[in-house]
Structure formats: C-alpha cells, structure tokens
Image (tube, rainbow, N blue to C red):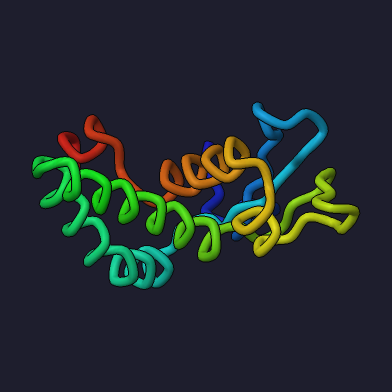
Length: 132
C-alpha cells in the first residue's frame, strides 16, 4: 500500500494572543501577546538596561536595594505595556479597564499577575535554558 504525500486538509493555526483567566481578580480575563522572534528582540532590547541595573543594585546597600526594587517595578510596567492586548471584566473608577488603567489605577496584584504571565510567555525558564 502506498502512502499519499499530499498535505493534510487542515492547516495549522497560530494565534498571536493568548487569553488568561485571572487568578487574583474573579471574572477578569486578559489577553497577552504570544512571543515571536521580532517581539522577543524588541522586548529584550527595551528591558536590557533595567534588568542589568536591577542585578547590580540588588546586592548593594539599602538605598541601592530600593533602586533595584524600582527597576523591577519598571520592568513589570514595561512588560504590561508591551504585552497586554486586552482586558475584560474589570472596571476602574467606573471605566472599562485598559492597559493604562491596569498600570496606573488597577489592583497591584492583577498587574503583577499579568506581568508574570507575559514574562513566562517571553522568557525561557531555568530548565528550558539548560536544555536549549
């Protein structure tokens, strides 16, 4: 019997965003960008200096550690502004939630959750780096 070399009738699909159900704020869903080579390059360039500064300062005196904390929060803000596409189920001061309102006025726990989701999508874990 001969196998056919014709392509499969269904083409693979790729969606450039992924939806998440919030674990910190009930009924909130948010969409984040999926990583592509160009997006990874763009984001890496943007956060490189902040990340290097954070690593250097976190081992210093209390003033340096405070500066390191600021650098980490700026990285979180950058991740959210870069990777959050849409948010549903959230109102802030009577207005529908947006990227801007999540960063400026939204619940800090939600902002941290979104930043973690984006970071896990973009950056390799320690185990993934070892196997790469």
